[in-house]
Amino acid sequence: MNITPNERDHAIATIITKGLTRPVSTHVFLREMWRVLGCRVIFLDLIPALLVSFVVALGYITIISLKLSLLQTGGNIYSVLFLFSPVLFLSLTLSTEVIEHYGGIYEIKMTSKYTIRQITAFRLLSFALVGMVSTILGSVIFSLTLETLQFVQLFSLTMASLFLCSLLTIYIMRRLHGGWYLGPLIWTNIGILPMLLFHENWERLLSNLPPVVAVAVATVACALFLREIKINTKGVLTYAYR
Image 1 (cartoon, rainbow, N blue to C red):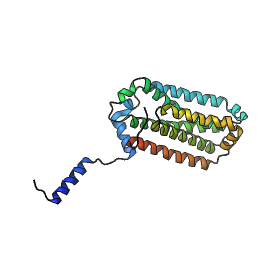
Image 2: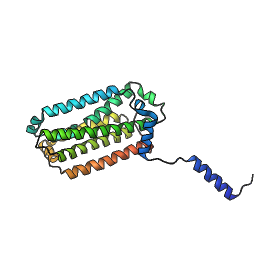
Image 3: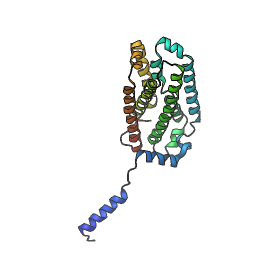
Image 4: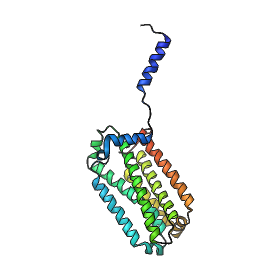
């Protein structure tokens, strides 16, 4: 069959147009995932993990509230709050990953329309949002309990802590096998080692950190965290979640 160059070019353009799908934004992709899968699949059988996480977070808030005066006297309240601000995010992440790895849910999700990485990215974003709410409430409670704690300074520091931890967790999960527990482990060391090595100097640094600097750190970390979410949903790079 003889065809003209124009007919050939038109046929090629038609094939390309029909074969290519128009890329969608990350929030549209995640919204569609929620519509298709729903809460039951994305958070399949994770109610025990949610309960454990909220108990851990409640226990943390209770202990901190009861020991505020002691921490203030000991001079390490900012160090402790910086370390434990992401406690809800970490407990949610660890609990859900443990259940998936050892409860057989991973095999179920392998049959899903979406990849394990995409579902995990959705969960981590959800956990970060829950962590933001808990961080805001915690900052309000602590600033009202102790008049020496300024809400703006405390809020900016804890938000920086939350997003640094979230970024570290998803970054390591995408690149290292076993990153689901290595991320929280590394964050714990990041929070504890300065307390052990530098003592009051670390506390002084955090307590005197200007809110504008902490907000800048939180903003950059949040932007990089959202970039990791986008990469995970689009499948740009090789990952090592499992």
